[in-house]
Image (cartoon, rainbow, N blue to C red; front, side, top):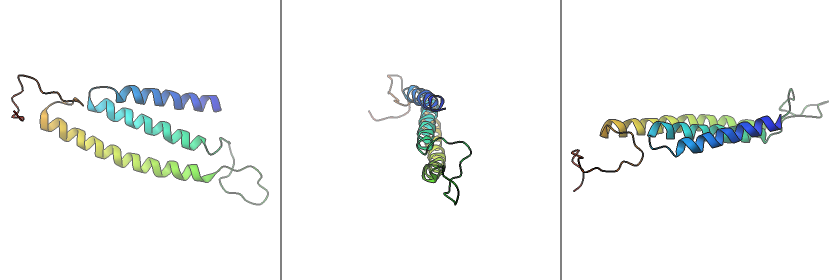
Length: 117
């Protein structure tokens, strides 16, 4: 189980970094989302991977799951959803403003958009 989860974290991290190095805004946003998912799975796995264990210590229960990583992951999911929406709106505004979605928008010699001379 640990090998599967650690492999998934590695694949998500590698895919996220690969997509973040692209030149267009949409793959960069997807890469940031994949990195967020990788961190969330890592945080969740840090609370011990036990199947069927309760998150609260009660009488007669010897094995339990730590509830703190679960709370951190739930908080991180909400924050990442909000930040992804903000970044998508910023990228959409940049695309609509310049009709180009490159991350490193380099001015060309035939650029007639009225940029600084």
